[in-house]
Length: 253
Image 1: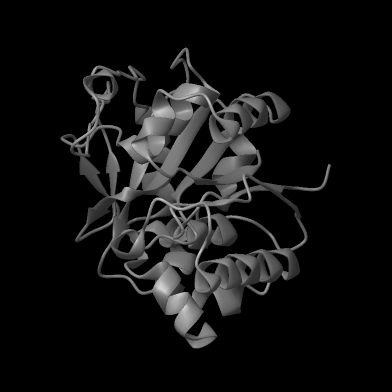
Image 2: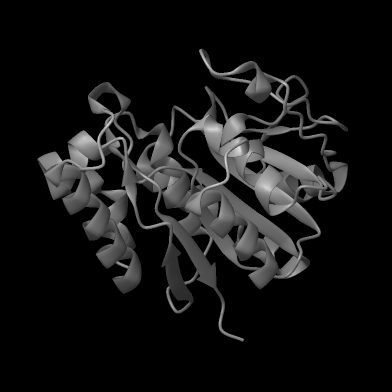
């Protein structure tokens, strides 16, 4: 299976038809239909490494101040005990979380990719105690899941600084600069540069800001080989400081 990194942006993408939601629908038609999905989301952080273990995952509306229509949205996908077991076999230290469901970073996109909600989903938490290299190393262990028809689905934003967001079509120069550097280093598969993003200077520090939206990219890199093909879509910055960049990693056929 390929690996996806999706820039999910605003929760409103769950109910709006735009260039981003259209591309998410299109990409699902270009890749094989997965047997199950392992999601790594910016919005599922814990003090440990856990997986969702519920048979059904509740739709979490983890946002405020949006139209009622958005809160009425449900994505009634099942969990997967089989996938939970597979992850536990690969990552011995993983814990089980029966309380968490499916957060908006995941369901807002999957509702456009797989609207029938007929694919089981398990979320893997972002462990706040790990550094970037440890996240990358953890992702390396997930590679084998791809051989079993499981889609590794990473959702965040390469550039994500809501403190400086504004209603403007013009991106900040630092946001454009870092977004383009990420494209360059992903294309070259200079993973070390991206793991050690702080060394890229102030553009990187402003763009990453709080790292939870960037970390899913590190999982996408870790779960792929450097000889895989890379393609980009949704290459646009919205609100001046949020990159919608999406990346598809595909093994050579």
